[in-house]
Length: 308
Image (cartoon, rainbow, N blue to C red; front, side):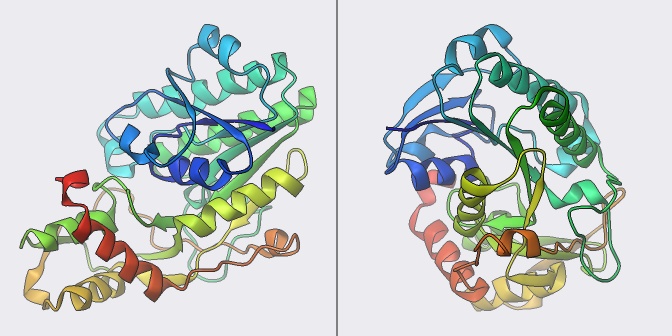
């Protein structure tokens, strides 16, 4: 049976990917279990767990060999935290990626996927980015992810490592740590608290269900080309104000539950991805936003013990 190593696999997206592939492969999860890593996310996933850090070359030298596929989800990923302190983001997202790529090269891993974000491009007023768009990150988080992507691509070009890069928009779904906007708003509303809306609420994000994102990553792992970037676009482009309206409606609440807050530094206005390259490989998102959001709200309502 194929062996897959999922780094950062106790986190939100990594755990969903591990669950997706567990029926077809022997899965190993490597995770440092920082605040957003939760082994409960893997309760239904047959796997071998390794508690460790992708910045540890000695550990990677023991864990990586023998795997047929390595998918790197390990990352610090919250923009607000990166503004408060960037060092941990550079450590994990840049040094960690380089350390992992080196370990995959040394172990002659046949296939590697580096999971990244649309935020590496900065902000776009109209249209959508293609994979050839210049990188212009505007936050320490985005800059660290762009740097990791360039490291991964360099290992493909310089060393011939069979690594592809995926970039995706805003994810949502069950088991997302409640610092991100949807679980934050949902858990606040479940507790009768107000929800914070940055600035004028006009910032636009492209939303994708985590299951669709993971399906796209699996397709890239199967059919992607070395050194190539593949976009995984969402199914709903919404302003933050529009998203807030959807969530208020789900709870039967009014706008008196919204607390305007000062906008954050360098807040990108709009993200949008063109995913024609991935669609040419056969990718199609399967979960409509309204359905996915309704199911996500229900999951948080039914699993207070997970987030409380």
